[in-house]
Figure 1 (cartoon, helix red, strand yellow):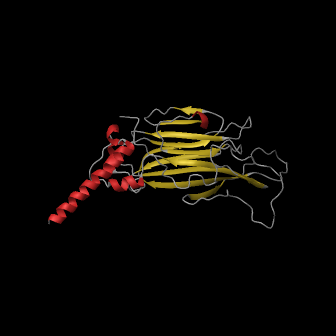
Figure 2 (cartoon, helix red, strand yellow):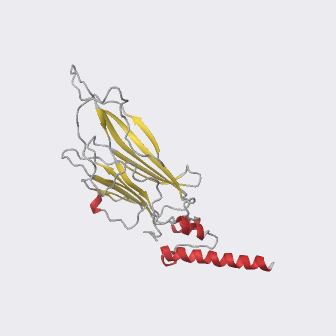
Figure 3 (spheres, rainbow, N blue to C red):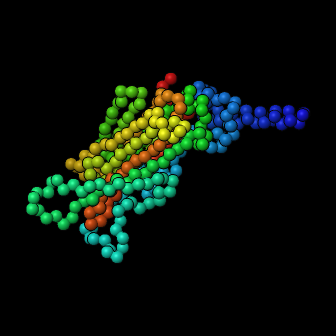
Length: 283
């Protein structure tokens, strides 16, 4: 019995030490984050769910938004007929669920009697990940009572659009170099490919424990300005705050438009991230 008491005492002491390490790492007490004794603080410290990217494989094309996207050479030469045609982007998409949606060909602008040799065929290429916040190391009291800010961000190029939502959620689409966010949950960059006026869509959902009930959702489908050529990265951002109790999963999905006309032309994406902060913007 005495050994059991000693063992329990040592375990309690070790649990308190792990809790102190977490507090020192993220300043939980100073920020008012609830830190109950029942949490496995050793697991929390080892998983480090706060202030890190929770998405796997954030740059599937092997690119970074700190470097301009590669310029494409339009050859106009048909691909080798002995090889299968390319209809989807190439890259390492491990960790992502991908899907391709073929869009109908738009022939509305072709005058009667005109013969067209080639028409562009557009496709949406979607990439999706779902994050289990509890499995990553976050705890109920943090998510339900404190509700840390959750931010979504994706990157593109030269035009700046900003929208203030009439709710507690703030949205912005900006030039990467001008973005300054204090609270980040999801970040990513997409390329201004100039393929179409609509080349990118983002859909992020905060889901309940059943993985189906949507507690909050943000969608974004910016319109590109094609009058002047520009080829850089753009970033789209959204901050979830005060979203209410019950959030246990984050569904992150973005869609990139690709074009096939003689050869393949794609829209790239990079540096996607989901970061939960140990802070909040609403009391």
